[in-house]
Length: 466
Ligand SMILES: CC(C)[C@H](C(=O)O)[C@@H](O)C(=O)O
Ligand code: SF4
Image 1 (tube, protein in one colour):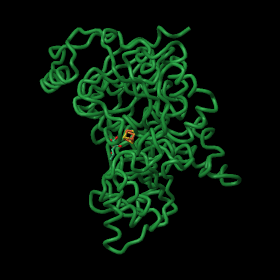
Image 2 (cartoon, helix red, strand yellow; image 1 turned 180 degrees about the vertical axis):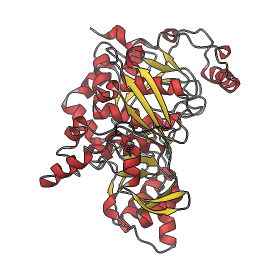
Image 3 (cartoon, protein in one colour; image 1 turned 135 degrees about the horizontal axis):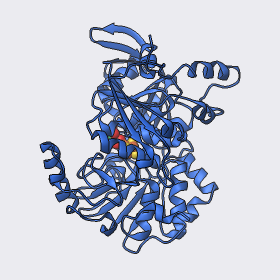
Image 4 (cartoon, helix red, strand yellow; image 1 turned 90 degrees about the horizontal axis):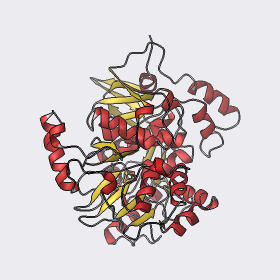
């Protein structure tokens, strides 16, 4: 019978059937400081060991400063959390990339770049944006702290099977349109809960054309549409990205691996529970106007009115969002001034994101009214960007160039916004208070963020193309 990519990976990992649920084997477990302390405490209490330290890798990312390598730079509580991770990793023989290490980075940036994520794997992390790794044709999803403990102890997890959704993006995007615009347009179409209970497979010409970095941006935000996971079938782009990476198969194992990976696609005639289609040429540069990622418009579209929504829940939500965001129906985004610009995060903190932002940054100077920061997603991204001179492009345009970490994506470190601040952000979440209490977040692509920094308000990145 014809199978979907999801079914293939799912079935290959079932160890046992537990009623409605399955017990599945986990190939890769990524860990960070926020969701692991209680899990390790649970293990220690029960006198258990980590079952497969060789399949477990840890990094420091959320609670660190991007201005200083000191663990206490964000206060004693963060310091304790980071020290606890270091101690747990040492006691349990888990490899850790601490602050300052040349492989450290945001968990969803450092994992793929080391070749830790391969097609067909099951990948978990105590972090909702684990969906990122689906870009490799892996089944990757976020888990809670008690599940982290379960995976540490057993390398297995009890899971229910999700429904399947195919999202096809056909045609080619216009010049200046990025993966971020595609995924925001998708969430705009299906809504921020539109994929609840589903595992998404992204397909179609516009998805095939994307680089691995761009595919990660797409899969990263699957959770923002409510999905359990998002996947893209591996192809030559995937194999070329993986070849030669530290943890990827090498030598005679490589060919055998590629042969298996080539079987990882949805078969002709495979059935999906839901199919959604978008036409890539219709997608404009996207900007969120509200407090969920589905509240999004093209940069030249006026801010909507609550009465534009027929669904009563959406109507109420629009009213609340407009009030929080300090916007009125009909406002033009090009009239909305921003006070901050954040370029970074596991959505858009990879080398291609920095290249595309730098292209725009090179055309001018950060407006006097704007504070703009660029935060590489990992130490490797930072090194690569510096080797290409991107740091100089940013700093001479007036952007701050920081150390790798989650930074302003969420208010867990010293990059916190104040009430009323308005930020053009390349991250993935824009709910109330995400970047600081009372702060307003507009999700955009790296190029759009750089354009906003220079103009001091939202601007159409297509006006910057030579
Ligand atoms: C801190 C962590 C548990 C959280 C997540 O699960 O996503 C964070 O990464 C986020 O983006 O909000
Ligand atoms: S960059 Fe943001 S979304 Fe990604 S893991 Fe860190 S806090 Fe979560």
